Length: 463
Picture 1 (cartoon, rainbow, N blue to C red):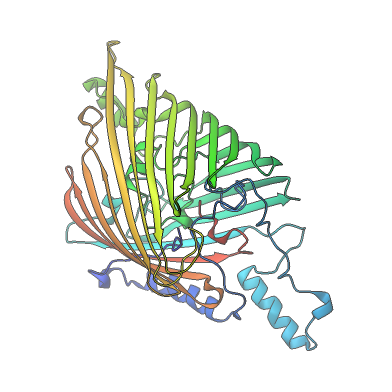
Picture 2: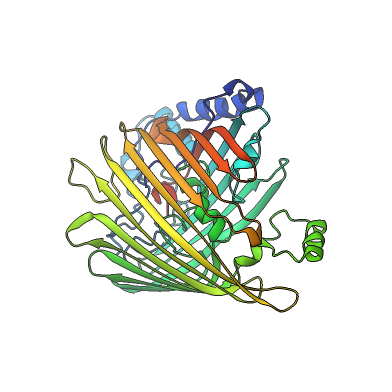
C-alpha cells in the first residue's frame, strides 16, 4: 500500500512533544532536503503489482510474480556524453547525488537504501506512549529513533536476485539494539518459478513482509504483533515462489526460526512464573521450526480485488505445535484504469484480514493443554491529493487468560504526506484510541518523520 513511509504525532498535548530535541531533528532533515534539486518524482506505491517479480529485491512482496519486468534501471546515472558544460552545474549535480543517493552506481549495483525514522508521542495525563507498543519495532519512547533501516537489493541479470536488510532501533530508555532482518538470494528458473534461501520474513497475509519504513501506520497491526512472533516471523531456510493464473502468487517457506530474545522479561519474572506454574506467552510463538504457505490471487471478475489465504505450522516454545491460519482481501476503487497498487487522487482501498492461532502446551506436571486466540485488522485508505493520504484502522486481538493475554481494541486515524524534492521526506500524524483490559482506555497521538536516502529502485521496499 502507498503511504507507508511513516510520520506520526499527536494532535493532543502537542506542546509536550515540541521539545528542542524533536524540533532540531525535524529541522535538520527539512533543511537538508530543501537544499537538494528536484529530480524525477519518486514513486510511493506501497505494494507491487502482480506483474512484478517475486523477488525480494523489489520489495520482498509476495504479491509479485516471478517476472523481471521491473529490474533496477541505471538510466538516471549521469552520462559522460551529456555532462554539463559548466563546472559549477556539474558540481551541483554531484552535491544532489550525495545528498539523496540518486544516480550513484559505483560497482554496478544500486546503493543501499537508508531510511531514518524518528517518532514522538504524547498521551493523556498519566499515560505513557510506550503503552501503545505491542511489538519490538513499535515506538518505545516519548521521543526517539523508531528505526534506522538499511536495505540493499541485488540483481544479477534477472537470473539471481537478493536482499540484505538490517535495522537499528531504540528500546525503552533510549538504548540501541540492532538486528539483521533479511539476507537471501533467489534463483529465477523461469518466468513462473523462483527458488531461494537464506534469512527472510515469511509471507503470511498482507503485512508480514513489511519492514518498519513500509508500515501503513506508526505501529504494527495488533494481530501481527501478537500472532506472528512479535510482528516478524523470521525464518532461516528455503523459499519457493510460483506464479499462478489470475495474477496469483503461491509462496512456500520452511526452515528454522530466528530467536527474538527474551522480549524484556527478566529472570525474576521467569522465576515467579515457574513458582506460579504460569504459561509464558512468548512460548506460544514459533520457536524451533516452521513451514508456511501463502496464496494471493486476483479474482477473474475483478482485477482490483485480491484474495489472500495463509497457513503456518511449526514447533513452539513449549516443545509442542502451533498452528496459524489466516484469510483476507484487498479491494481498490479508482476512476482510472490502474493496477491494484497504483494510487492517484480519489483512489480508495479497503483491506481486511483475520488470523486464528491454536497452541498446544504442556505444563510442569506434564498435562496437555490447547489454547487459541485470534485477531483482525481492517484498514480503509483514501488518496486525498497527489502527496497526502488519509487512513483509518481498527484492529483487535482476543483474550487468552492462561497466557495472560488481554482483549485489546485499537482505533487509529493517520495522515501521511510527502515533502521535499523527490519526496525524500515523509511526515505522518496519527491518533490512537486504545482499549485494553489491563491498561484501560488511553489516547495517544504520534508524529513521525522519515527520510529516505538511496537510489529508490525498491520504491519504498514495501512488502
